[in-house]
Image (spheres, helix red, strand yellow):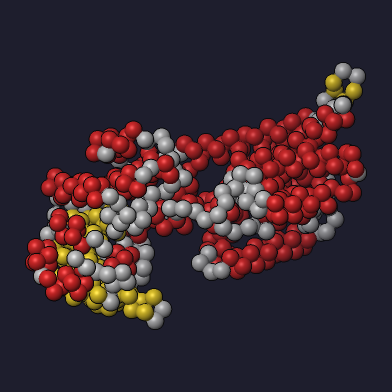
Length: 292
Length: 235
């Protein structure tokens, strides 16, 4: 029983990171119908920026702040410079562009920081909370991860639900042409969407770095988990991304605890394929064509 | 108010508009009629900036606006009621309405206009918190119209407002248009397949066929011209 609780708690912390990455993918998918394969690369670069700040004696919080700000900037620039020109083209073009960006970012990181993964210290203690005479598999650092991602999600929910910028962004995502006819500058909302997504990804990167380390290819697996979580939740749904991330995190934690950590990636792959075969729209996705 | 001169628009090799001229004076209602594929919708989409004109000019209040984006045209007083009751079904009724005026700076005026819209369409007020998906066809048309009015347009473009609606609902919408014209001096251009109901409220009718204007006369004359009616209007 104690083992089960431990695995559930550990899975929740991991799941929140997957949820954040899934959310970043969903934000972009919803507005531009593009799967951003560069998401992991963008998060990796921003985490390296955080790493550099800490290395030069900056505080963790300054590093986190700068990483998120850099995420905003990188997301906006990527959309304006790279995605905008292929927005009206077949979807494959955009996919190739994001893959190209991923390769570019990984090469860039390799040139600057080398290929060896670097360690990244967390903001809080990574020893589990004491519960009676034993330690839980859930640390203050894990708690911070959960709370930070929850706070960002709540913030996004408020932004989308209650602000006029959020209304514009939703309108642009659901019906871009109608939105334009009502005066919404749709191109601008797309840039903002990419910026927000990259910022959320940047947060996820800094949160996950203590356990994966930072390196040019270090986030590849995490991105696959984030992508699986997004597909599980239905690529279209922010709430689905969160639920998908948590479900996947917990499921993979059980798998790792009861069957061994070697099969975790395989487990994610099985989930991905199963969802695509049984329920391609995901748990929360809207199926079929949009009716107007 | 709106002047269109020699407008040409193409889809690939097809000349959807082949030199269209049209004038809609301030405070008038103009009906653009014609069969399917005559170029009616393309005309609207070229005027509102969604389709780029190959040649010709669009003028609003004497100023050339050809090539401006839809977003900018809205800010110059163009209102739009898209085809197929283009309400955004995922958003609530109130969100749809707010969207129509989001570009405006005067918050207070917006609040007043929202209240006024609910007065004009009490049904929308009763359903303000529901998603537009739950509305009937007629209610959606009201919503699309109310939403366009939230931008306080001086020129309102309507694309097939009566499509798929019960005659009673169509009459209601036409009555609202007439009232807006009388009260606020709104200029209206409506594209309609349903020539009879459109001509009943229009001052002028323009008939398109294969991208060209084949008739442009007072609405009464058009309705009385049996040859034209049979050839292009189907009644």
